[in-house]
Each structure stands twice: as structure tokens, then as C-alpha cells.
Image (cartoon, rainbow, N blue to C red; front, side, top):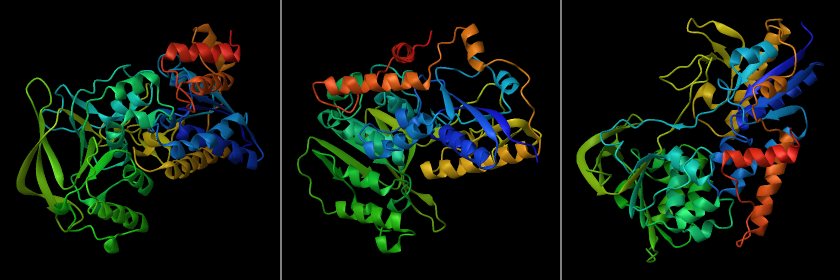
Amino acid sequence: MTDLNLRVAIVGAGPAGVYAGNILANAVGEAGGTVAIDLFDSLPAPYGLIRYGVAPDHPRIKGIVNSLHEMLDAGTIRFLGNVEIGRDVTIDELQERYDAVILATGAIRDAALNIPGIDLPGSHGAAEFVAWYDGHPEAPSDWTLDAREVAVIGNGNVALDVARVLAKHAVDLRPTEIPDNVLAGLEASAVTDVHLFGRRGPADIKFTPIELRELGEVPNVDIIVHEEDFADADPANASNNQLKVMLRILNSWRTREETGATRRLHLHFYHLPLEVRGEDRVESVRFERTEPDGNGSVRGTGEYREIAVQQVYRAVGYYGSPVPGAPFDAAAGVIPNAGGRVVAASGTPIGGLYATGWIKRGPVGLIGHTKSDAMETIEHLVADASAGLLTAPVATGDITELLDERTVAFTTWDGWLALDAHERALGAAHVHTRERVKVVPRDEQVEISRAGALIS
């Protein structure tokens, strides 16, 4: 067994990357070795989809940031933000400087919904909208919300988040960390009716109970469900306790009376989208009514419906992006791998190159899956290192020297602490006291981070 004395680069500072770094540090330490870990991200700030993919009115879910903060603040992982792999530094250059490279870049693009009219003006991917309301630096600063009736296609938590943010009154988002430009856009929204569509029934929803329960607590928004959707929605027949809770929630809404709220959120089940219709922009969506097929899926009934909407958001999943210099399975949207070991087209593992998180397994599962996923990858990395299968670094000097040579304005953990404090100060000083006010422009984030960390 080879003594473990490793340098490892992790690409992606979301939960997958941070968990992988923490698990690696613990595993090597328990084996009596040492490891130096550099965590790279293309954005100036850490936390990935926890910062830029979770709705701002979910502080309990965002509480995961506290544990990620502790892991990065421990000093065993060095954060290097605002570094784009393939532009500022290549995977080959990382492999020259590290024993191993772990790719944890996630999946941030919208999966396609291949139906006619999906590209009409007014049709959007949910991930684009999420990036806007979460203040992603690469999202547009403005978002047009001039439609009264809006469709959200999907039956997962992202669809639910998008539907809730669209239906919610901006005044109820003021206490959150929502960026000022987003708050202004939502205050000007013309939305009155949000329609959420799923092709399966209530017993096949992919929500979580907390998300669904919160939906029913949104002020001044009526939840509308339809009796025809509930023939197979008996909580007593639920396959697990989580689904049983959600079916009870949905069934309780069947007897809720409309209050005359100024906004309504309509839940439609058994609706398969066939076409987005319109001339110069979205005018409606055509669906086929579905029914259970007895084999765990659904089939068409031959009954067609057309529902008038002026905007459409597809929330049918995420899709990974290629990482320059790494293999990519375009059909699955993942980096091909065997248990986290990245493999070439021949199926042979590429020495010293690993993957974890959504870019490894696809955009499925919750935070708990991310931890177990990282454990598998790290177990294989440590096994390879112990067996002497990793190639030792050949380049000398610290990676920051190369970044400085290329005038890359990288950010650090100290820089994030400065940006974090700045955003919290903006929130405290806001006319509506808030936890923080996000700084959105990349250049401004970098400037605050580098000034606060005293990076020359």
C-alpha cells in the first residue's frame, strides 16, 4: 500500500464538490496520510445550486449552506473561484499539478421538451427563470412578466418552485435574500393565474412534502384542483409515508373554497403536453388527457384540451454541460464513468480523473444522495491512490502562480467571507430588513471579494 500524500483538484463548488472534498480529507486523514485540496468554481462565490438554484423563500433548505460553510471554513479545502476550466486553465494542466481531478460541475441547463412551438417567444426553460430570480451573474437582469396566464410543465420541486414564485405576491418575498432587480420585476408582474401541469397523476408527483405544504400557505393565492384527477389518489394506497402525506395535502385542497384571492394556482394532473401554439408568441398549450395504464405509467385517452396561456415554463429536468477536456455522454448529459472513475469511449478508466454529483449520475436525488454519491467516488480514488495507480504531479509551483501569470482574477474563501458580509450589510440596511441582498454582477462580486481578501 502506497503512503497517501496527495494533491487533489475538485471542479465545482456546489454541495457535490464540497462534500467530496470533506469526505476525501477525512478518508485520507483516517488512513494516516495527508491531502491538499483545491476547490475550483467558475463563479466568484461558492455553493453552486444552493446559492443559485434554490428559491429565495426556502430558508430552511438553504440551511445546508451552514454545513457547507463549516467544511470550507475548516481550512482543509482551498476555494478558488472565478476560474473557468477550459478557458483559464485546462484539465490537462490540472492533471500536471494534482494527483487526481474530481469533476463536480453539476447540471444547470434545462432538459429539452421536444414538442412543436416550444421555442416560441414567451416559452422558457425553468432553469433560466430560476437563475434570474436567484441572481445568477450570467442571467439577464430583467425578466418580462407581462402574461396574465402562465403554464409550468413538470411535476417536480423545480416546477413547484417556479409556479410558487410566479403566483406569490412580491411583498411576501421582501424579507428573503431576493435581489433588488428581481423584486422589482416581480412587483410589476401581471400574472393572475398559474397552471401547473403533470402528465401523470397525484400518486406520481416528484415533490417533497415540505414544498407541497408550503404551497398551500402562500398568502392571497387560491389553490385550485380538479375532481377528475383524484380517482387514484387515496392516501391509504400510497407506496410510502412521504407520498401518503402529500396525497393527504392534495386531498385536503379538494374541499377548500376559493377566497377571491387576486391570484390562483391551478394544479392539473394527467395532462401530456403536445404543442405550444401561437403566432408571434405563446397563446396556448394543447394537451392530451392521460390515464394510468396499469403498468406504472400512463397512456393517452384521445381527449384533447387547449388551455390559453401567454407564457410557458418547462421544468422537465436538468441537463449537464460538457467539461472541456473530459469525455461527455451527450444523450445522458453526464460524464461517462464507472462508480465515479471517468472512462474513455473504450470503457477504460482515465487515470486520476473522477466525477461526482449530477454530472456523474444525472440530475436526480436530493442532498443525501449527493453525500453517498461522493463517498463512492472518494472510495475509488483512495483505493486507486493506495494501489499506486495515480500519476504524481510533474509541474512545479502553485496553481495560483499560473492564474496570476494569466491575469485571472480568482477569488478565495476570505474573499467570499468579505462578499458574504457585504451582502448581509446590504440586507440589514434595506428599507425592508432582509437576511441579505445578493450582489448580482460578476465584476462587482469579484471586486468586493478581492478587495476584502487583499488579493493583489
